[in-house]
Image 1 (spheres, rainbow, N blue to C red):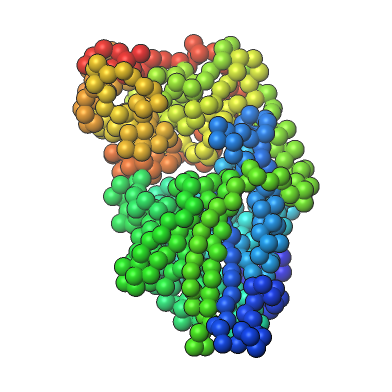
Image 2 (cartoon, helix red, strand yellow):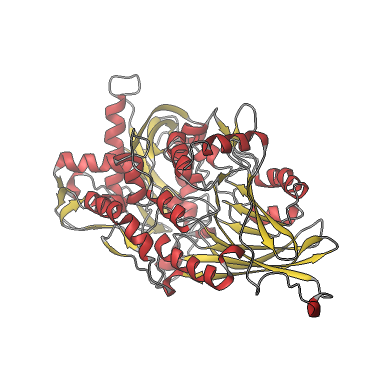
Amino acid sequence: MPLNRRKFLEKSAVTGAGVALAGQAAAPAAHAATDTAASAKRPKRYSLTVLGTTDLHGNVFNWDYFKDTDYSDKAGNAVGLARISTLVNEIREEKGRCNTLLIDAGDTIQGTPLTYYYAKVDPITAKGGPVHPMAQAMNAIGYDAAALGNHEFNYGIETLRKFEDQLDFPLLGANAVDAKSLRPAFPPYFIKEFRVHGARPVKVAVLGLTNPGIAIWDKAYVQGKLAFPGLEEQAAKWVPKLKSLGADVVIVSAHSGASGTSSYGDQLPYVENAAANVARQVPDIDAILVGHAHMEIPEQKVTNEQTGKTVVLSEPLLWGERLTLFDIELVFSKGRWEVESVAASLRNSNTVVADPKITKLLTDEHEKVAEYVNQVVGSATVTLTTVDARYQDAPIIDLINKVQEDVVKAALAGTEYAALPVVSQASPFSRTSEIPAGNVTIRDLSSLYVYDNTLVAKLLTGAQVRAYLEYSAEYYVQTAPDAVVDVEKLTNANGRPDYNYDYVSGVQYDIDVAQPAGSRIKNLTYNGAALDDAQQFVFAVNNYRANGGGAFPHVATAQELWSESTEIRTRIAEWVTAKGVLDPKDFASLDWKLTRNGTPVF
């Protein structure tokens, strides 16, 4: 990368000047405006294709590091940038490379052991450190721009800035601003010109928007440094600017879902999943590449409330399973280009093989990470699994809570809080995680705790613990006492994801799913006696939940007693390594059960 690139991007971020690339090759005749006598009376036309990925989460190869084998799922999907590269090559060949633009909607550098390894084990921030595998792959494929995702901030701003430096394209974030000056901390937009024979160039602008929830989820890294205003207000600020700079086409790359909902309740005045709101409220946007929600949206049409024009949205699932294509038709009339139509579709990466160029480029990095995650750290006396963990108290989740309790107790030893009882929360993140009997590896433990969360200790009362449990129990679908229980329909009420359901260890309770939400926690006890609402507890909680992720009551505003930067996943590995043997008698406890009118469901 040229040495002056970072300075250019910083200047761009401060002044609002976009990144402009001109001098593209002339378009092939099939796409270029015609200039023959026969067609002189017809308006000139141009076809442009914008390609998009999102939520790659560190997937380069079609490989499952947690299972040490090729990736597979029930739907037959394939993952990874190596296959996306093949799709991109095919479309560039089909459409003409000079008629395509490739963008991403964020969440790139977190999500697999590959990304963890180059953030923590062999970090890109070290002096003379490696180039991030995702930077290598995306540079080789030829991305034009990418929006910031919330997970870009998981390893801190230093890691993010180093990753940014290693890219040959800009990371966009119009609503990622300096906390004091409120000026953009990243380039807000990118502009590229496409030459057209016989007419002025087509100017395409990409506006990048990220998620306001970063202020909550990665508070420890960004508080006082960066702020994240709402997508709607920032799009309303920047889109007119792009039009004034001559943009003929305006694309928004938004790390924000289309549902209009938020997972953080009323903690922020901004909507988490605001992409459709942006389309409705802000004029002059032609298409939005949607991210964050991990949904598959081939094409969604939204009518702008001010202009009545259609805005086309598309979200290509996640992990490189799909590639979005926005096919945009323009017509040159009265000295200017106008968008005549936009159509979105998806290409499936399971229809192609990996691009050998990308495979060869990153084989060494892949093999290093595979060796790392297959290190043996202990042995298990029995197989532990999460298969039933979302509706039955599973020892494998008790392991997480036991580790968190032990770490917090050790951290608070000798303080004024040392005598308080410690309770802990953990979620059944995965439905397929398994620690097999016999040798236990880092990948086994990583599959149990797939997020890079860290540990926090908060101070809660018994009454607050009760309210916390009631909120968690909303995860279950109300089920009549005499109804047949279908475990596939028992959970995820109102779309609540598994990671927003919490076990709490150290207390005992029943969850009566025959009762309406808010009245389900029964027989709540501590040390064999009814829970005292005034009793104080130290609550061991992950940083996502501690900062308000999932909008659980009380925890975000509770007094913080201690926190650390070591990942919970690492603490679990350390605990197992120290024990040597993973035996349920050392961590399993029956803390809760599902009931209906007092009768156990299972």
